[in-house]
Length: 78
Image 1 (cartoon, helix red, strand yellow):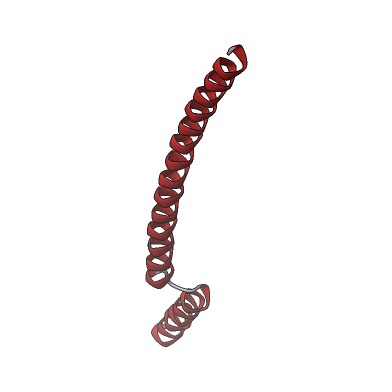
Image 2 (cartoon, one colour):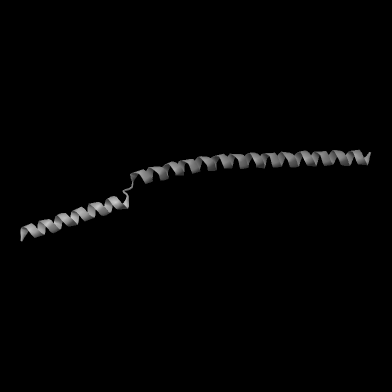
């Protein structure tokens, strides 16, 4: 009779443990889904920032043309 009682206790302990592990796994899946969502949002923001920035060659060209214009204006004024 004591073997049957110990087996019943062991079964209850296993069920409790499996239930706890199942809950923890569900929480991890939820956190993983939230992380995936956050990553997707950040990726979209980075892409928007990339599209909105001026590339360095364009800035260099604008500065060069401006310097040339100022030089020609100074040369023509003297």
